[in-house]
Figure 1 (cartoon, rainbow, N blue to C red):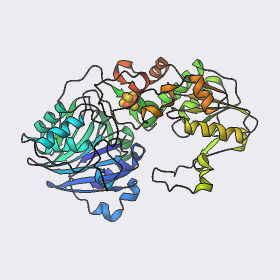
Figure 2 (figure 1 turned 90 degrees about the vertical axis):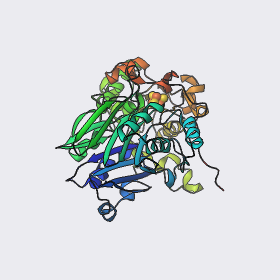
Figure 3 (figure 1 turned 90 degrees about the horizontal axis):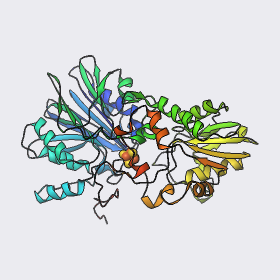
Figure 4 (figure 1 turned 180 degrees about the vertical axis):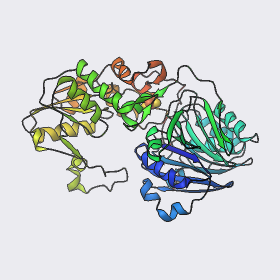
Length: 459
Ligand code: SF4
């Protein structure tokens, strides 16, 4: 998780455009946001905890002048959710100053950190991102070569935007695990995690940055280099398709909303049920619920109303309110009373939220509550930048479908086949990582996958 944006333009207000680009990418990370600009080689960065609209205001944006800007929205997957881990990071090295934003997780960060420490480089954060910045900032080769050298040393998932020496650079790991695309705003070049950010700033989508490709933009134009050979057919995270990416984005040329509707249609074919209403768990379950409802000709209902303002920094309620639990987030409509309802969600990770929703619907008078999930059971940990849960907490890792049904208290429960999910993307399985659904990992996995593994002991 994390959103990236970058632009180079000598005419436009690059910080303001980046602000709007990040606003479109808010769903990829709500913990912190930041923008770094380069004004004739001088780098200034502003980053803080909170949403894009909380971190920046008119005055702050006006203070960010330059011809290049990069931006980042963060959801922490390595390193704690603290200011010192907010991005873009700025690294002053022996070769250059670098500002950098990263989406993904490195699987060899521990070894690279040890190597940098041995060379006498001190790392100030507990995020794997600093390793990438330090390698580029301390490589004496010209910038493009230094980035290519760094790409060859990294393993795991990394989509990255960089600002250094008056240039904007963007690159993707050789499996293309996290998305990154290239756009044109008239004569200017823009990069973004998802096409929805290019749409918002009025840029045309040029193409996706290829796995292993490095793009460098300077005052003379954009230059592409296949810095690292493509590894197999690629390994785009399938979670992007059913959960993370915004529905109006296009991944591998496929609109995410359409793929999610097809997931619901396929689920209707594979696991039909007699019911009166189909309800989504908003928002990411909504397109699949539309598909499920269409597939079986059962009326679609909003049924559950979501409060969209419950963020990760939400103030915890006191004991009395805590008993209301899930109602802070969802409240059912009266129309579920006496009805056989199907609830469609994108995934079940720990199972606690689903259990509370089922219970809430029964309390609201539903006669039956059937649960349909648009992705197969999550049975493995993610080492590549999606914050799933500790393996011990993954409900499907240790329980059968029937045991999960019992745990969540549903009338019935069904998941789609892996083939069904894959077919909905209209792209072959050879182009995807599906490791948390299969335990078939595309890289060697680190012995230690904990998010806080590089955290210093703080008193
Ligand atoms: S393990 Fe799962 S969540 Fe992680 S990159 Fe692969 S498909 Fe995505």
